[in-house]
Image (cartoon, rainbow, N blue to C red; front, side, top):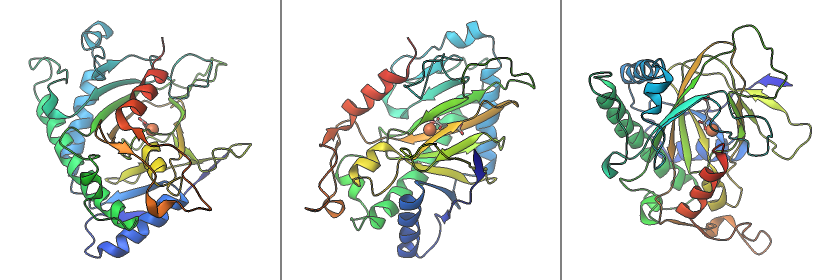
Length: 307
Ligand SMILES: O=C(O)CCC(=O)C(=O)O
Ligand SMILES: [Fe+2]
């Protein structure tokens, strides 16, 4: 079952920060998803990143495997990841490429002679989206009645933050011969603080707002040209004691080829994520113990890769 959904639209450039923070708070409580506009990442750059992504994924598999994932950076092939760890079917029908923080030297780069504009496009995109995400996190802090620089002070934000995941869903054409339950991206929630997602407009993304309600109700999330689709991740849900929702989402197996680019803002690795005082009380005690971000994230990565 699926319905179309109208998510709130948040304007990152609005001068009225307190009213924006209030709208964000409502969006995070009601949906855990919203659109972000006036975010400062220009359309030309987004177009370049999608072009470079499509150029890379069109290479033969042997070439792509030369950059196979190491230290969470590089290429993962079709069916190599399964975001819903409870499924018994083979992995998700997508291939991906991960690029992390620019300063740590761990990124893998395609050869310049193969893709001359790749590196500059990806580096610029990383910087620009990190800057938009950082502004958004200061508004999220305000929305939780915290100081604007709260996420800096607790070590969640630093120059070692921000992971780009390029995604390519090859598309199944019109035939759907398989009876197996294979998704483009199977049902999952994201792990970190926030995710900023751009798609090429091909439909497929759905959310389920009540994770534990049966049967699950899935609603389509249409793309709005130029807007990021932002969602709250599990670590933010932990900080807020489930006030903000880390909403379950998935991508249906697209008939048509589909590209998207996710930008994950996970907390810095030494950051301890623990229930905010404003989100618990005697009647509503913390639901999760404090946890070090890197311990939590490593375990989640380990579970999603298909052995
Ligand atoms: O491709 C999409 O629309 C969503 C991707 C996603 O949920 C993810 O990469 O975590
Ligand atoms: Fe996701």
